Amino acid sequence: MTAELVMDALLMAVWRRKPTAEVLIHSDQGSQYTSERCQHFMTAHNLKSSMSRRGNCHDNAVAESFFQLLKRERIKKRIYKNREEAKADIFDYVEMFYNAKRRHSACEDQAPAVYESAWFMRHGTV
Image (cartoon, one colour):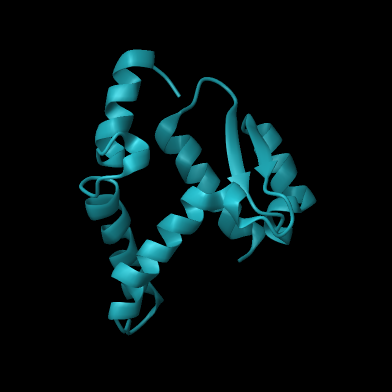
C-alpha cells in the first residue's frame, strides 16, 4: 500500500462526508500512514492521525474484523480477471451489502448505513 492510495481514499471520504469538525483517522504504524506527505495531507484536511501501538491488533479490532469478513465472504470465493473487476466487486460488497444490509453488534444490531443515518439525525454532523 502506498501513501498515495491512502491519501486518495481519505480525499474521497472528505469529499463525500464534508466533515465540519476534526476527524480521527485510525491506522497502524505503516509507512504509508507515517509518511511526511500523508501527515501533511491529514493536517491540511483537518484529519487527526491515531495509530495503534506496535504489535497490538486489538487497537484496530473493527478494521481487522471488516477485512477478515471481506476476505472470507467475498475475495476468497472469487477469481478476478483484472484489477478493475476486483475493484468493482469489492465496491459492490462494501457499499451495496456490508454498509447497507449487514447488521453489526457494534451498531446496535443495525447495518452501518442505518446506524449512521440515525446518528446524523440526532447530531447533525460528523
